[in-house]
Image (cartoon, one colour):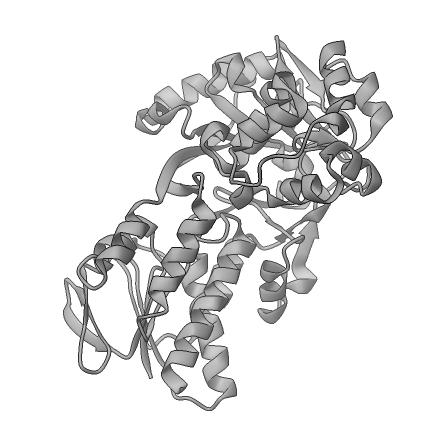
Length: 465
């Protein structure tokens, strides 16, 4: 069986790993060929090692509440090298508002508190917002259809909770406008709480999801390889045992053939028994538009947003104003370019080197698309000015790493789950063809690994039936 893997991000490489495993277990001969438009594998996973620092310029960890990435790490022999979040500097998320940093109350989970007293004692929220949350159990259940994140939060908890916490937290995770984000596709657990208990607040008090006194993101659930996220890429490239890896080779066309599929690139057309497309949904839609116009249209309808990630390294002796926590979120109402800051050297001290302060800054997204167009000096100028506002001191970084990720984050619009169901239904009609990536079941690394395993299983079933 000869299979083309199109796209060398975490999804494409994972699909190759799982397909190799399935074929090995079933004694099925397998020849894997990788096509990648860029010069290297890994996609957004990008690790830089300098001195005793291991810096992540893309995702810095993966969450374990979804098991697929951790399971993959174990299969790749990485379990013993995984590091949890360090807690020497505290475990708080801060909200920047009105010129100062406010600690998010202990136990505050994305859009609602799971602990009552810390919430009531917090100076971040007005008395009216606190009363509105206390009255949330009286709010009727929703109508049952899909609803935007903004609509849900404001309906259940009011505008202030949305503006100060839900918008910067959830908007920061997806780099998107929460008014356009589908709750069922991004945060379905809150719909389940409403359905189960009639009240999100009451459900959280009974079943608090946070641990170890955290606020905001559930930091205790995140793990990272000590050697860097790119070690996952290296291990996957090895485990897949590719017959050929063609970099700087975008796939330009895809056609059905008598044997299976013709994959067209600058090298010409090559025949394969099966193809796994691990590319953006729009690219997949273009490649499939002639083969299945309805499938191509559905795929082309998935929208993406861009982001900029800047990693700043400071000498510890030159830095002042670092808060005792792990991250800072910045509401859009503050009218700043920064979306959030991750205090990387507090979060993963084992990867940050000695005597260094490392901060990862996030800009751009759906609410500020122009950030993608700035040159490096403009980005550095914005970072210097706005970090001085956040931390109260004009800190000069010793090193700055800037990465742009154009149209790399799928934005799950209303009706996304239904659209994905339609995509997978149409896909089932095409033997030897599979899709995987962040556009379908979730944008996190575990979601990408999950989609990759599903794609590998489909190809294996199609080929051996």
